Image 1 (tube, rainbow, N blue to C red):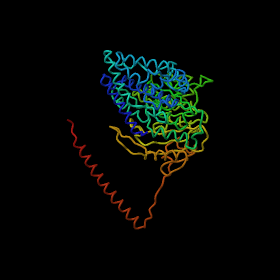
Image 2 (image 1 turned 90 degrees about the horizontal axis):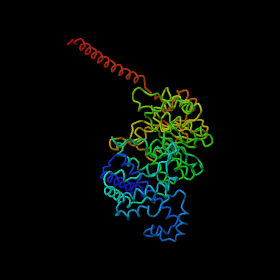
Image 3 (image 1 turned 60 degrees about the vertical axis):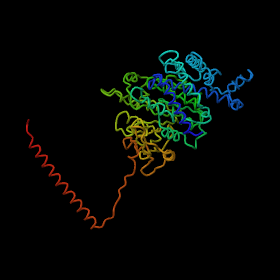
Image 4 (image 1 turned 180 degrees about the vertical axis):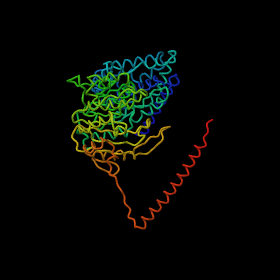
Length: 548
């Protein structure tokens, strides 16, 4: 497969679906977003089913119409074929597949037929593919998509026909043969128009591929690939799942179980798509929609009053958000140990600037197993804050020797925000030293629309990973420091504060030294003269002031 060619095909499909929505009066609103995401999900389920059927019966892949070939098999052979499918295969019938519906699009009531098909698929696959909310409700796979189109039945029929004309010409089947983080490559393109005035803000759901790669390669070094197994991976602010996908690929999809929670229904839908594509369907029951800070869903199976603890945690939590409506609820005794460093106060102004990421960091610490590892994206200001909750968190991490290291990233690594970020790595196993890397000088600056973005090359990503994993000190790039040294510098985690200060000396003869001093004296005398002239001008101007 040629990834750029595939990506362009997919972008063309997104643009095609958006054009269909725009022609129906749904341009750039939330319903358009639902239609596109759920249409992609329907397409993926159909192609996943086709892929598994052809893999179970290779003869079907060689016929002109595999659906006709499948239906021509004896009834007992059809049942044997179904029984041979992996358990994560979606349950579909022949008449629910895109090609079958495409052949019926001339029928009256085609939109209703499509909606009925989606609902039937959702019901049949509810146990496997439905996302659960924090109050135990299940979010079904599909809505009745044509009902978002206002107008007559004929208009809705035309809308659905137009969508099918876009879907029928592309196949995702080949993606199921490999590890492919669909939304890491395409998410920004998919939601580019929804970051505008009336489309909502979804940028928090996307994490750059470079950040995800660095996290995964440090948490699971190359020499450990294939040895880690039966582990749990968690993200309490999962978004579309880019970080979880990278981590699962590093560990091995069959060697880990994914757990997540995110307050957004949209992000839960996107993560579900990613799991379908990336051989992680077995983890869909662990994907939860809800408020992680207020009502964390994942609990200890033995002691439900306690948080479940995980082997690996990755997260790029929201940095600032108004949580004043439920802030006081977090003060309860039940949350006292979770938020050990405190809860940000509600400011008199700018409630949307409340530092909610500080709650996520504390939640992650409480959710990390003994011997577990975590990687968290934080504002770079967190690593040097001289007081407050930030300092109390860093002090605990140092006192309990939980820090593996910090990588300070280049500015504008996120195209959607100018906030400088660092990656905080935690490790509950013993470490003698903490690795601090200043990668701020790396990367190439590029323009994306009105935004500037920094792109790291693969070599630069690997330089960061190799330096970190080797726990290597590199001049003006990285240091390995002890916990006592960190405590002595007010628990700062900024690499620059630990770099060796170098003083360069020039060998001068007495004559050269005297000449330099004389030059300094001349320059200084000139500056003093300019200063006196400026003082006289100011005094004269003030003296000339008159009351009007």
